[in-house]
Amino acid sequence: MTDDTATFLRAHPPFEAMSGADLAFAASRLHPVRFAAGDVVSEPATGPAERFYVLRKGRITGEAPDDGTEVQEWRLDEGACFPVGALVENRPVQRVQRAQTDVLCLTMDRIDFEALRARSAPFDAFCRNRLAALLVQSRRHVRAEAVTDLGQDTSLNVALSARRMRPPVTCTPDTPIREALDVMSSLRIGSMIVTDADARPVGIFTLKDLLNRVALPGTPLEAPLSSVMTPDPVSLPQTAFAFEAAMAMAEAGIQHVCVVDAGRLIGVVSERDLFSMQRVGLVNLSKSIAAAGTVPDLARMTADIHQLVAQMMAQGVKVGQITQIITLLNDQIVQRVLALVLAEHGPPGVPFTWLAFGSEGRQEQTLKTDQDNGILFAVPDGMTADAVRARLLPLAHKVNEALDACGFTLCTGGIMARNPECCLSADEWRARFRRWINATTPENLLNAAIFFDFRGIHGPEEPVRALRHWLLDQIGENGLFRRQMAANALRNAPPLGMIREFRLSGTGHEANTVDLKFNGVTPFVDAARILALAARAGATNTTERLEAAASAGKVQPQDVAAWTDAYDYIRMLRLRLNERQSIANEPLGNRVDPAQLNELDRRILREAFKEARRLQAKLALDYQL
Image 1 (cartoon, rainbow, N blue to C red):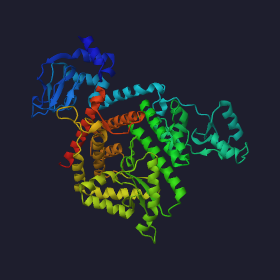
Image 2: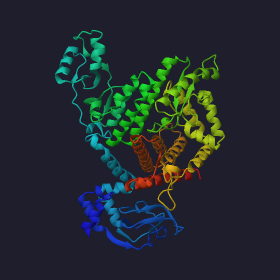
Image 3: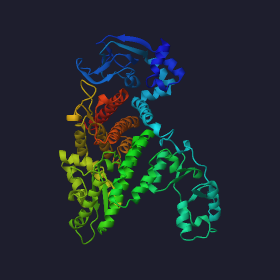
């Protein structure tokens, strides 16, 4: 029986990650127990959980302890481990667990359960965060489906020290240009790192420098390299992730990053190194956006962004990093559109900052996005706010239309810079925010959820910081407003079913689906916003807000880890859905039919929704709702 048990366990998490010895230990201590349909497996009334179970055959459901006739919220299927949370926390189970069919379980007592945790790190990690363990398996599955076209080991989610770096070719600042060119030619390399006596990078000399600083101006080849190098090259520690190097390259428009250890050069990473297997490079795409001469040129790059996202998903890049890259590229498109429109329209003659709200303000954009933007402007002496607005609105109208042509659809709610109510001075924005805070109507609460996630994309940043600090002070002192925000957020409950696994909705071809944005992503976004405002944290990104709340002592770090895992999974599922829709030339949407998901995804989605519900329970407790 032990060999047969081990074979069964090996097919399910967390046992598939265990060593042979630990798996044998588990198999030797798990013993079969049978339950007939209708039998109670465990219940709150029996006190703290004392036995660990693995469901081998049949189905078990959870019921509310005060109602033994109606199935509540979840179901266990073959391979499920339970009641892990109750065992770890030494508490009773929270639901009656009842066999719905004839059931065969494998079980061990608490002593053996704790012994297995002590000897097996994968099992202990699974017990501490079951969702995280399931997500590891899901990411492997997603990557395996698409990685065949991209070669091996192309993940950006590894430290630079773990990637194959080119050995640095260096020279000193006083090296003659001719000598450096001889070395570059003989080694067939396109760059040379200039280092000081302590091996610290002080400059980089590339073929671009050769053209712009040597050939065109006619600089003598005997001149020192320090006179034509690009000083202060971008450097990252070897502990930085490859993703960070890719982002640094895209933001600075460069193709090389120095890798240092305690400030000393140990290697060089190029865009080619990071994206050697990709058909679309992040840096090249970023450069193409910056060089686009017309709005139609920008519009044609949308397909490249979709392709890049698909490739990163296949690489196993984390969803938070993918959405940051999408936001980076979208920001660059917005900035380029502004540059093109300003070149055509002429400068308005007054300082202004282009603002992003909603998902773009949180740096959490996906492939499906519309426009949520506005303008924050200063009022020069001798002018009125209305006079400044009259100058800016024609410009804003052209920018909004150009962004629509680039795939950022016009906001049906009118939250766009061309709307006079979204083109305001700092004093007007404060008055508007103050009005929403003091009169918490449903409409004002909805506006707060969108507008309070603002971020500057183009123009002076200091007015944005000042407005953010003012807002945090206003809300930090207003517990009633936060309570009303929390009450409003709790109205959007995760779609966990009473009879079935999920509470389904939708009409027409979207019937019997769940909305991954409204019912999945939004509960995390809304709760994180409230927690961050209570902590007076200036972050707008959801994950950063949760981490800031933990740093302020508002929540526990282990809870943040579980909530972040759940939030990221739902976002990744949404990205996968949009990618399939894009390939099929279908409109991008947010609804998914759980019946069309594989068993692993259904299981993780249930767990993710449970985490959303647990996060909302935290809000309800904090604000006595």
